[in-house]
Image (cartoon, rainbow, N blue to C red; front, side):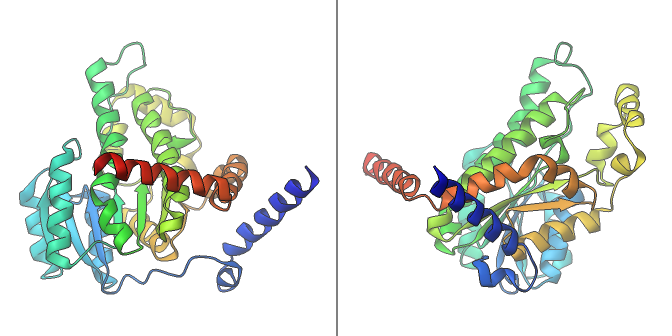
Length: 311
């Protein structure tokens, strides 16, 4: 028991050291993922945060696959960015369309290094007891299952390139979801998906992380606070929480995290301290699982069994 506690404390100290700029690499932090020449697969890229992530990734030297429901705005953005960008039509509720988009991206650019699962919608501001069931389930379908489908579609290509998966989350992963239950449920699920991927993919050399983002000045945020009930909830919160950050700042935070292969990205500045108050244990747990031989053996056995079933 004492030995286990000592090892746990040691892992915690190393994990904290890994997060320190410059010296982190000395403690086993993943090598930086320079985006120059990399292929970045972005969902929800037609507008808002997804479009800005694509622009900034392109500015950093990446080739970008623009994925979304409507082809016209994607094609316009691809034309704006030039030959290093390509548009692929795929709704994140359609697993086959996402798989085709991933395959066509790999054919066009030679592979996929980074997946940024960004597509999402805002639910109507109703209680669990009053929301239309179809609206609740459609939000979860897009905001949670859409990210799972995106990851699954691109995963073989990302494993082949030992790349990185970035899931766009929200403060609603740990904030109370009053009048936004399906969105909060989805983002809490996205958090668990990111943590699971981080452990399961570590032995493949693939990293995964989640961006806990506050309110952003986009159409999604405007829609979320469009009605009187949502505005009332917003008025209860301190101004620094509900003040939206620019889409440029949010996109830069996501991409900085990708280049660091970060397991966790927070923006704006106040999000990190609030998250840290409840997240140290979960981060340590992930690290313990990654370095546990029996866990790694179990993952390999599960993958081997799946391969035998598929053969």
